[in-house]
Length: 353
Ligand SMILES: [Zn+2]
Ligand SMILES: [Zn+2]
Ligand SMILES: [Zn+2]
Ligand SMILES: [Zn+2]
Image 1 (cartoon, helix red, strand yellow):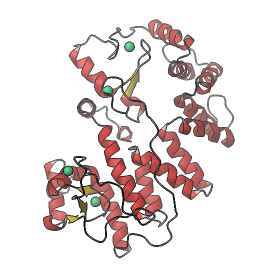
Image 2: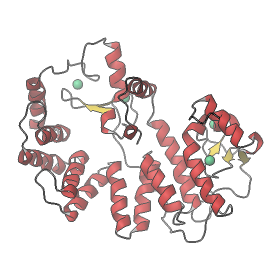
Image 3: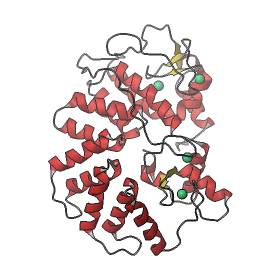
Image 4: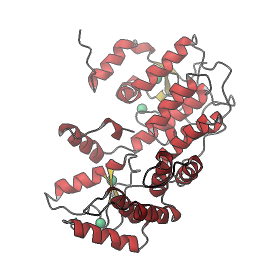
């Protein structure tokens, strides 16, 4: 029997097979409607597939977390939702269908997402993974991989900046001259970039750990989360000549998290969790999951909901926000770039974070 993973219409067909069509969604007036932590009904319902707001939506019958216009919308979204839906349903089944077990913690209302950096061309929030956006030292802009890829295709081999059209530097000397010029302008991203070139001896530079840390600190002091994250990491591992120091690590990761860096906020969640601050950890993960970070969403289900620490209503609210954020992170250009990476064997699973 064929057991390979299938995509697209086959995935939808799989769902139709696994749940009888008439039962895959249920009406909003069902009494098992997800409720927020304080017992009130969750805020405006939104279809997780087409983002339509309506009171007449139907709820996914399996996980009881997300809403759809109809079975068509649900099937369209199944590829995105399948993994989480199955994990949540498994937990609910173990509990005999109970949404909560009574040991859940009160994590308060969902905070508003902090402003996040957008691609200046498509205006979509930048993807999380560093390899899916590019910093251009000509204009200092960070452009998403989708827009960069589209531009490279359109300009047929004329390698230039997707934003300002400046030809890309062709030699190490040119790369370093530009990087230094922007670093002198105190562009925090450029300082961090140049720091990491010194740290790894890139573009013909000799490895210089002292210079690397000096530039990173300068960038971190200007509030650049990427530099704060790197410094935190080096203190965690004792790299780049820095001593292993948990306090320093926490300080830098906190700064990066406060600056809106979601992977840092996710890590901070684990640090809080390990110190026994589970409520704070869940608050961090809920925020980052609602901004579309997959690992936070996964940890909320596997480490919090499954253990009876997180209310089903809070999970449902987060999951709805998660899908809206994931849609915001997508664009045709980005999809095409991912396709290109997959076709050329350059794609890595970690990009999908
Ligand atoms: Zn819909
Ligand atoms: Zn579901
Ligand atoms: Zn873009
Ligand atoms: Zn440029």
